[in-house]
Image (cartoon, rainbow, N blue to C red; front, side, top):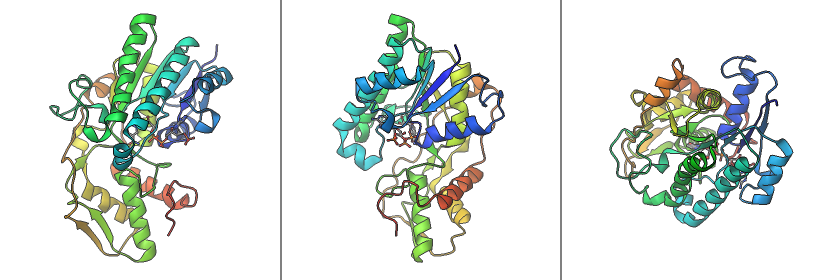
Length: 327
Ligand SMILES: NC(=O)c1ccc[n+]([C@@H]2O[C@H](COP(=O)([O-])OP(=O)(O)OC[C@H]3O[C@@H](n4cnc5c(N)ncnc54)[C@H](OP(=O)(O)O)[C@@H]3O)[C@@H](O)[C@H]2O)c1
């Protein structure tokens, strides 16, 4: 039976990156499309995965042999704090429907996408795959984090009771083409790109909140896409894998803002509003398990990845997710 790989959440940042890699890497190569494979990138309009019937219909339509499960209700800090039950419930329903339908239809393998938010708030750094359940997640997103953590619990239970090959991936901060650039609800990189773009357009200062000193591990969506494809083909264990650049490749918010200024050729006033809170200084996560397993892997240099993202944003501004504000 030829392989059919269903990517749930296929229209989002990570889903579109996997589509790009599958379509552009040489056919038959480590990350390219293999002969006979069919890849399906599903949007929520094809089936609302909170609903068991619609989930069943999606599986009946495509008969996937493998699933990369990315679909989730996602959002920034404000949305997570305001809608804790919705984040808990929607994500619990989506994950339960996908995993249970995959089990009932004998899907050979499912990789679900977790997030570093699942880790305990109070934990010894660096984060690694063994620390997920060692304490409560941060209070600000406990609905989302608990729903995601339960995927790891379910994966183990499906394996122990039914022998299913279900596993999970834990990416750090992702950015790239097709990101959400809505200033109300975007992650730091797309938000700063959009802000700087508007400063340039309206000849206003580009003001970055905080000191610019906090450090983060950012992974380019197209690199992450290759790691998902690797995990799909070459990793058959229930335990999650952190998919990230190394701890030594942390980038400061100032480096991010500098790279955006450079990519947009912004030459207006550029400052840091140090009266605004910085958030946690570092949250390093170890990619040792990944590197030990995958062997050779070349991450795209940060500035190049950022420049590609900015160029994509400029080219697709009219259709990109920018929210209501098109000033
Ligand atoms: N972005 C990050 O920095 C990051 C970091 C760690 C982990 N993750 C995880 O990575 C996964 C993908 O994130 P992303 O950044 O690519 O998100 P995204 O760009 O916002 O995409 C979310 C996707 O989920 C789909 N979706 C949402 N609700 C759905 C529903 N009820 N039924 C079916 N599909 C639904 C959306 O479909 P439509 O657009 O068609 O509605 C969209 O394709 C998520 O599980 C997220 O938790 C993201």
